[in-house]
Length: 112
Image (cartoon, rainbow, N blue to C red; front, side, top):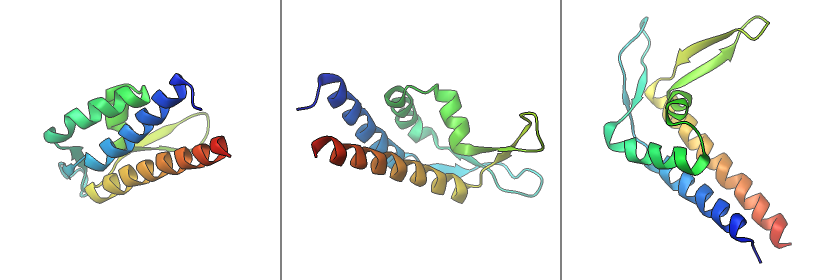
C-alpha cells in the first residue's frame, strides 16, 4: 500500500492538476507592441490552492505562469518576457500535463 505521506502527495498533485485546469488568463496591457497576460480575479482561489499544494510562493507561481525568464549571455543574466494570453494558457496546460504525466509514471512504477 501507499504510506500516508504518499497518499497526501498524490492527492496534492491531482488537486494541482485540477486547479491548473481552472486558471483563467486575461489579456494584460500591451507593452512595446506585444500583448501580455494576467490571471483573472476569479482564478485567485485556484492559484492560492495550487501554491499551497505545490508548496510554492503564490507570487512566484503567478510570475511563472505569466512571465518567461530567459537566460541571456552568461554569468546568470536573465531577461523577463511577459507571456501573451495564449502563451500563458499553453504554459499552464503544459505544466498540468507534465505533473499528471510524472504522477502517472510514478504510480505505475510504484504499483509494479
